[in-house]
Image 1 (cartoon, rainbow over the protein chains, first blue to last red):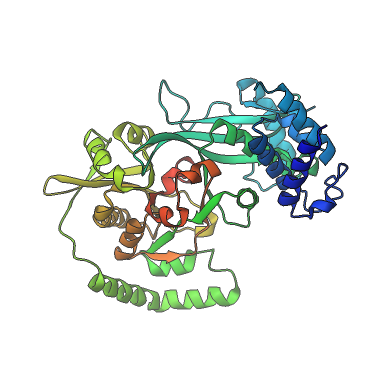
Image 2: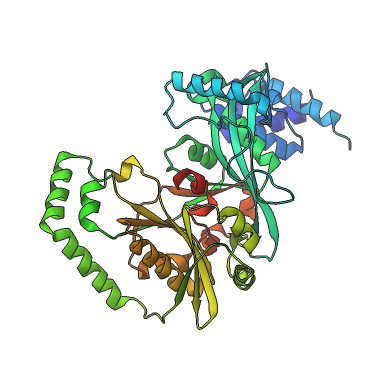
Length: 83
Length: 373
């Protein structure tokens, strides 16, 4: 996973969840971030799709369990996207 | 199993019935059930028509976890363009009774946004409901479409209006006013006052019509550039929305000196517990150039009064139609009829705070036609 994608995902998550960037880690989950509810989860997915120009399947959105995994998912999507 | 969202087909009908049973068993309100037939009764797909309704389901293996309806309709915009816009309605998720499915509601909305990026919601029952809460948090543009009412029979209104008769003291006061004739006198005084203040109106010809003809196309062409956003209301669309076979609506053609000014569709609402036994009429839909709104609203109002309704209600978004409602003796009350636009749709409506009072939305732009009449 590149640091660049992870940092962008952390920044987006920090903005959406209204949590300081320093509190967003690889292993941050809905259990550790109080404001990460189902609506903010959707908001995160929509923002990621827009910022990275990728499309996530419903099961991928449901499977977004922690920040590190989300960054990996985005990176996989970017690699699969033809330039 | 992962959730998959796909069109509702006949083979899903039993799974939808089971979904509805789980919602009811889980304590959902009685009216929170999804359509049990895959083919929409209201506006099913028909030939090449661009006005149609379709259903989608969130499936977890063969189990239904949610569903929504999407109405597609052409809208005209201030820039002169006509675009297909989606109306997102009846979203229902098993998440309302089982938190394990809390993400389904969001997935349904996202699916609709992918299928129809220019998407709106209308009505929704107020900002305290789950859907508008979600839309606001996702950054949709929104506002309350003004609500108007006119009391025709004040004594009956006071005795039957269950929404207002919420406490024993209120019920006593309302009954006292109703039986003393105070309500009648106050109403007469109010309408006399409004009559003295309202603009004088030239006499119009009001005709009850069976069907919208070509004349409605001419009205549409003349008037639609004057609205920032409006659903296409040409004669073909109107014949689909208000077919001659539908006896719930009265269609009015309003003319002056043999020139068409506008039209209205009015009807009496189904009985509803909140209105008691009141007969409630509705100005469901209407069309004219904004400067001709008043004669159309007057014609609609007089038609409903002649039909014997006790109360008339309407929602209007455009400022000139709102002014016409007030000039026709209507009062404005707290609205719970929310218009909300997706970000893509809102981009076409900037600056939204200014544009919203130049859009033409009525009850007919929601799902009220089949539900309430």
